[in-house]
Length: 401
Ligand SMILES: [Zn+2]
Picture (cartoon, rainbow, N blue to C red):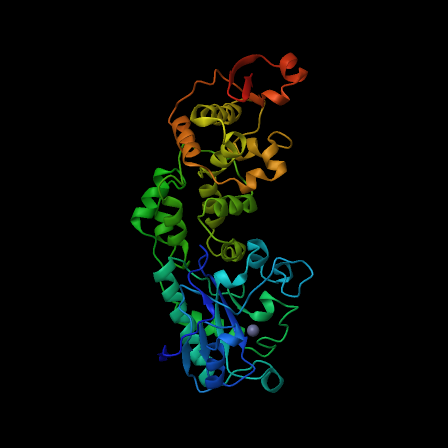
């Protein structure tokens, strides 16, 4: 496959608005290869694609992978036929922004009325090679592994079913493409690096690395461990107390260790690697992010000292028989922390100060006098004053046990 790069489209945004692309979207062009490339390079069309594949297997690149092409725009207006909430792809519904930012488009020469999206053999093999090329390039440029599955190799109709129900058409050979793209890697051996194994042992996620040395069938396991092992993500002093795999996925997403759970869900479900579920839960249990997010949501304006007190309260609760086991269970106990119910926990992006506070407290700093409760001065009511023992006040918070 040779990629022609002489035709460049002006119809694009430079960069990707901080997103990294992980979904490849296939289209049918409703036009011919040469004139289609020309049209998508014409400013009048206000549309573009990263790649265009002709019926003879010709391939053109019109927009750089680092840039945003205009082919899959979704809107945030409910009721609009391009509304992101209509998508059949979970990531599109979750990300709530224009799908252009995190997708890569491939146009295929053809007309829906003639082919219903089927490809010529030359076009099919060029598409397979092109997708393998894209996966390698995205790994090099963005450090992301695009999973080879139907959540990540999709049609325009999956992104915007009401807007483009027939793009690329019901005969488009998604399954064959996925089979062939995977083809070369079926017998490949994916080893976990010793560095990552050591990091997992040090974080008390695994006891003996021997079992994991023998697991060589999971393409992205080493990437998962490497993301988890990054500085400050895993901490053996942390115990989130998570036992549920879905809670584990959401913590891993919050921590930036995985983008979506889909790839891991199907592997865990297959049961192919017996202890994979335990490993994922084990990593989630050592993630600082839960403590950092709740401390941020509760005390972003309280300064380092005030943030340390709040972190101490959470850890004091973990050590108290009157509260659940583990940070996650303490934080998510019904009606205990208002940020969990009012949505500010979900939105919290821990500040540098919060990260330092959590780090200090995990390192043993504790001036909390055993505090198990705190409230803002404004909400300190009779219950707190009567039922609890007042300990001290810091800025806007009053602390009790
Ligand atoms: Zn389309």
